[in-house]
Length: 424
Ligand code: GUN
Ligand code: ZN
Image 1 (cartoon, rainbow, N blue to C red):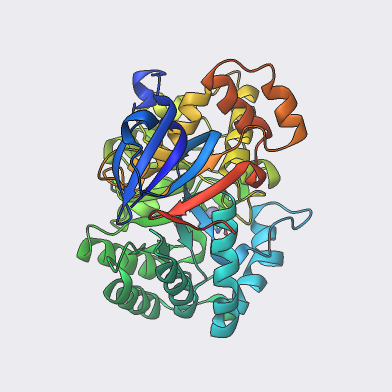
Image 2 (cartoon, protein in one colour):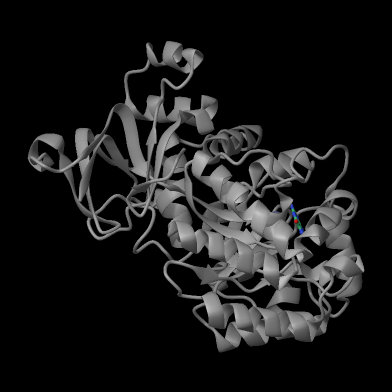
């Protein structure tokens, strides 16, 4: 049993219902027992002799961030110069992913990947691995060692890529099936069915992914859609029978509320209506979309269209591991569209919102009794410049917005995984 003391903040309200004040306990505490939250309240009510205290007064205790779209084998692809999506994949990404056929490389990279997440205050991520089953096994095994609630899938890709990263429809099916059998539901781990995107899968492989989704209706499916105009045009050429990009996935039986669709930048009105009908999730990746020059996510439009949205780093098209930086860029993308992202909506998005998008809202993303004790302490005075700005801050939303705009891993004072302090 232990107590974490600080300003306890949690965002329970759905931003679709408008900006609602969060739970906010100025001198608060979280009582943690056996990896779960046992109680939340005023420090004065929860303090008890003999229980160790992590004292984070002056800091904000929040649920750990959730990153619903990130690529494990791209940790050395971040900051690759000069290309748009398809060239970027061919020139930088596929060669980097080819190295993950080597179990030793995948094993060496796994702790570095999870350390980076924890430094950034991210306690759960939904990860694309390479096309090699060993890459997913290495990552899941390291996450298990740390007790993390991690989701990972081996990418399925059987065409339009170098041989070193290609599988086949059958091997992708069998490897994914084996991963689900061996890892899904083990501890806090999950496996996701992960067809990379329409261009790199034959219709036969997408059908195999659909068969897996039908056989395992509780398993998440993740892929990319409508990120870049050249990608959309090539997809239309490769699937002449499909009505549009979304229809490629729909025909393969992949469209449901378990489907996480990365990017969603250039969707047609029909695709938006169909996604809303199926309640498929639109995953925004602002740093990646800006970096690759892909476009500006229409957050307000998709929400108004009834689509649940999530927010992700998309490392290594994305440029920062930090969900704080990602929220800061999401604010600027909204500003470019003449809109504004409120700090309460932003922090809800990166915690409870992302948890709900992953169907984990019943145990992650909130500070409430019974929830997993995946928590962070954020320091709004982490740098001299932030401390200076804080001198003029009066409200919680101002402090959070300062973290959103100026914060990064330096502002993460501690990250707890199932109640265990994990940040070195
Ligand atoms: N589309 C297909 N694969 C990828 C990828 O690895 N990153 C991004 N940003 N888009 C993709
Ligand atoms: Zn991606």
